[in-house]
Image 1 (cartoon, helix red, strand yellow):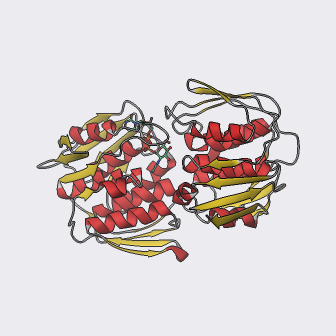
Image 2 (cartoon, rainbow, N blue to C red):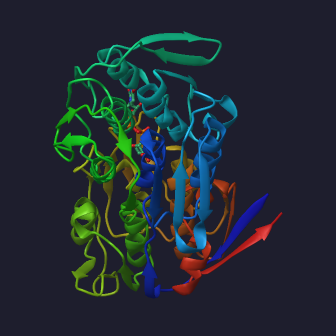
Length: 420
Ligand code: UD1
């Protein structure tokens, strides 16, 4: 199994190009199943998760051409041959459940392996299913699978008890081909939802209100192929912003949408980081003044993203003064705390809150990536830690960050990948 070996690296400097968004491209690839015709997706990031989605779409009957060097994926689905997502793929990537809405819309049936628990919480899919039921589908569960069937889908009103990103996307994708109008209330407002709506509208769908808490969809009889450029990854953006901050460096980030990272910008400024936006990109400087603590509460968008919580925790361990982080989105997203504590962070967890004393000189240690964003936090901590940090189970990082080690090295990080 491969590992990263990270040495204390000094301030990062230079420029980094942010890739297309993982969490936008996955639902967009699933939505391509809705089209009678070819969909061309541009700025697709080269990621293991994207690869899994390609495999899944092929198993369903799509013809998929990947040209990762040019960030281009072409998907065409003339005939659905298998209306299901098998356990082998769902267990590798939870986002496989996003094919359920499009399959149900196109063939009136879909069978998906239940994703089960994962490192960051139980993550049920009850809200996805509640949405399909509101559109007239019958749901049956058994033998580790859930199946949805309908004679026809008809528009309906769905209130989401929590603004789940995946449920909002799955329900939108089922509703675009339903007969009549659908309203999703307390919908998720993430930029990836807006990107999905834009993609489907280019295919001929009628989706309004994406990016607000009420999404209205007027069903249409069919959708055609289209071409779409995926938005930049706001979590990769945030990760490199924190990398500049934690190493007290000076980095220019290119291909970013500052509006999508507003809470990250606000919190970094509270820590004393300087952020300047220009036509060139976003310059992040952690070298202008000593950095200080701040408190964070994760929330659905436009609140502070849970996917940036582990990386921020690494930063807060190194700044002056104590901080409190409250995780409200996932019930068990503190697996990285034990690893940061092995490096000397001395973080304490109290229920959903954690107290970070700060003022620590981290020490290199052997640590593991417990999940994708936790893995990023380990790399960030390793860049500041005295001595060598050995990070194992890095396959998590390759799921969601494109050219991760190369990008860090180009900024001056001392990071190498070794095969064990
Ligand atoms: C998406 C992102 C993930 C991010 C998360 C929250 C993708 C591929 N992944 O995941 O990176 O961390 O949003 O921003 O886009 N819930 C239910 N019932 C449901 C669905 C969700 O109770 O039917 C709960 C979950 O257990 C969790 C919370 O809602 O506590 C948020 O989950 P959700 O927004 O659905 O996250 P994902 O779409 O899985």
